[in-house]
Length: 176
Image 1 (spheres, helix red, strand yellow):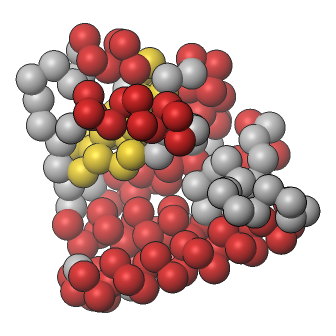
Image 2 (spheres, helix red, strand yellow):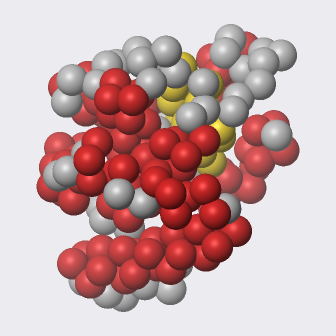
C-alpha cells in the first residue's frame, strides 16, 4: 500500500481496512443501491476476515498486496446490488475467491473470469479458489484473456486490480 511501506504487516492491514471502509462509504453515497445490500456480505460470507487471513497464509502473499477484507465485502455488496452476469476479475487473488463465492451462493449462472499477468500468481489464486470449493475454472493469463474471453465481448463488471502500479498503467487502455 503506497505510503505505508514502513509499517509492520499487522498495522498495514488495519490501515488498509480503514481505507477500504472509507472507500465503501464514498461509493455508497455515489451508488445508493449499495445501501440496500449492506447486510448481504455477512450473510453470504460470514467469515470473510478469516478466509482473507487464510488466503494470505496459503498463497504466501503479504498483506499490502492482497485486496482487503473490506474490499471483498464491498465486492459482494456490489454484486448483490447490481447482479452482473459476466465479471472480469483483472488481477487474480482473493477477489477471485470472493466473486466465485458470491456466484455460488447467489447467481450460479454468472460467469467469473479471473486474469493475471503473472502465471505463477494466477495458479496460486486458482488453487486457492479450487481448494476452497468455489471452483478453479476460467483463470487466464493476460495474453490468453485477450485472445479468448475478451475478444469482442462485454462484461457487466470489471474488477481492475493488477499487482503493481506499473502493470496497471501499462494495461489500462487494453482493459477498456
